[in-house]
Length: 106
Image 1: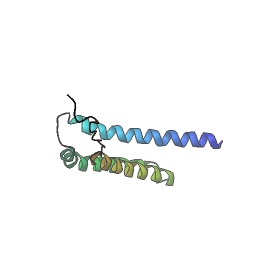
Image 2 (image 1 turned 180 degrees about the horizontal axis):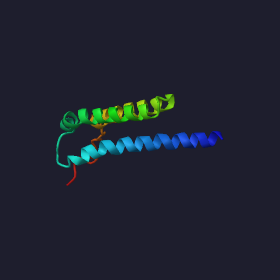
Image 3 (image 1 turned 90 degrees about the vertical axis):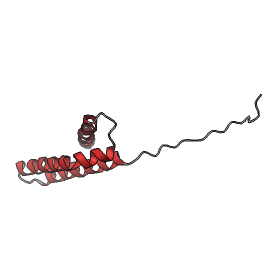
Image 4 (image 1 turned 45 degrees about the vertical axis):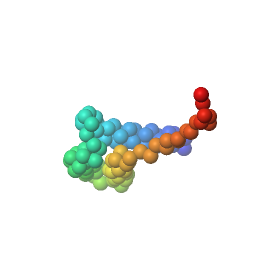
């Protein structure tokens, strides 16, 4: 029984993460040009945030403010905010400078 609960919760968490990630990726795919991600953030994030807040509140009200629904959709909302922040962070790719071992080749 416990194993089924763990599998169920894992599936719900992964499905939620995937849905939020795809919804944010669709916003960036919409601007397929070389538009800067900060420009996309300034242009689209307020509307995304308002729409997400309205959708989450509508589901909470529709389910009569059950605590589990409030927990789920508040987690959904904050996960979306976290993923937007992570999408804007510049990636820190480590580049290793390799120096040649044989400096005096003919």
